[in-house]
Length: 449
RNA sequence: GUGAUUGUAGCUCAGUUGGUUAGAGCACUGGUUUGUGGUGCCGGGGGUCGUGGGUUCGAGUCCCAUCAGUCACCCCA
Image 1: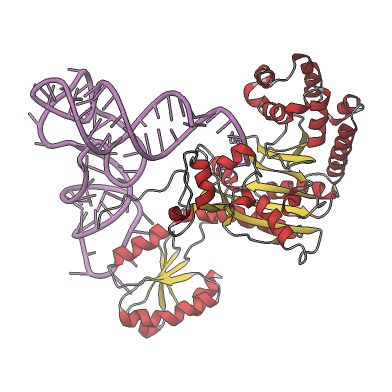
Image 2 (image 1 turned 180 degrees about the vertical axis):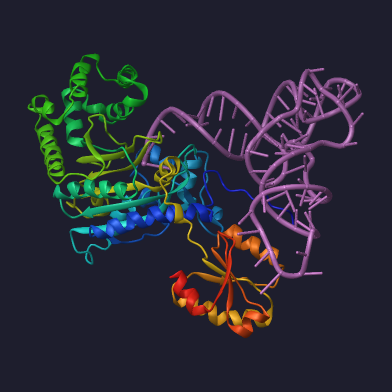
């Protein structure tokens, strides 16, 4: 057998225990908060039919979907002619793909199970998703999303709740200086309409989204290259100069859709203000656009200002996501947490609790068959008392056993040899102080619990 | 899909204007009273220098190609 180099595919990662303890800490915090707000868990499969996914994320998104080759002799069934290219061949030999996000599979789930679901449906979902783009910092080909959505109501109270939920999670994780940016697609529509650039809505919005990255001049340059007329920029400037929501009303008074967007925005912001947030700031940001083109109303994005990593969460309202699966007139709104990026932020700011590496508290050293057998009931007693304990599995040198305990961060090593077996008094070594003391199991359990 | 950059031990790296048997730290392992770790001391294993060509008396070092990683763009969490 030839040796295979132990490497991973591009953009894929192992997670060691040290990392997993911390990731789980984030997962648990988010999960508890979701449940506290009344969201129920669901899961969807890793693979969807490829038609379920294609066309939902734009052309760029389609390119980034991981496709799964059919099983069996797929090539024998394929038809070739001189026009066959990778794209047309793909259609013949691929019918499944890995999920690209959690929202589209969720829409499929809701449409498919509409008769069993009680609306409004509040669900959360924490699963990994795959994207075939080039990895870079804070960007992987496999990563987790943690989504919470409410579907089956257009009430803006949901938006209010989701803003609170964001604030709650980031407060619990103790991430400081978090901005929850909010905007409304209808306001953007109105702006683009007033600019006379309705045909270039996507282009305008994508360019606008880059404002803080490339600057206003470049944004205008990009818009112009896409076909936006120069005289539209006075309107753009007017919108960009709005510092608060009030400034928008005069700008939007001519636009019906803009008025609607403004009304929605004000409702959400006023209500959040009334309730108050614990640590995050809710900030109106006209430049906030978000690429995913299924958003229709409110859009949200979360930034941790102390770390340059991009957004650590995002979401918005989608009025018609399920209609592509045959379920019409169902409005939904949801948010997503980018756990990989939250991890990076917390790591960089040193926000993980000290004692997060939960591990064995007590280890019995192994002195041989009889001694080990003597330890088993003691082990059981400790575990029953909720004290994590293990027995070193084989009789090896003390040095090796102690090194194992030390490297694993075990707090107490218990030595049971002939003497201890006879007296039932255990030698307990505190690995922190190095001190050793003698006691029976009952006292040990009392001491440690 | 486009561009930049890097590739030496399991990991982090050193390696001078090309010159003998390619080094260090960490990790692993053996010893230092065979019932005691984390700190000390002594020893040991481990590298086709990413891969394939080329220049040269001689290449880890120079040239070309290729592969892989990283970063940035597009897009996005």
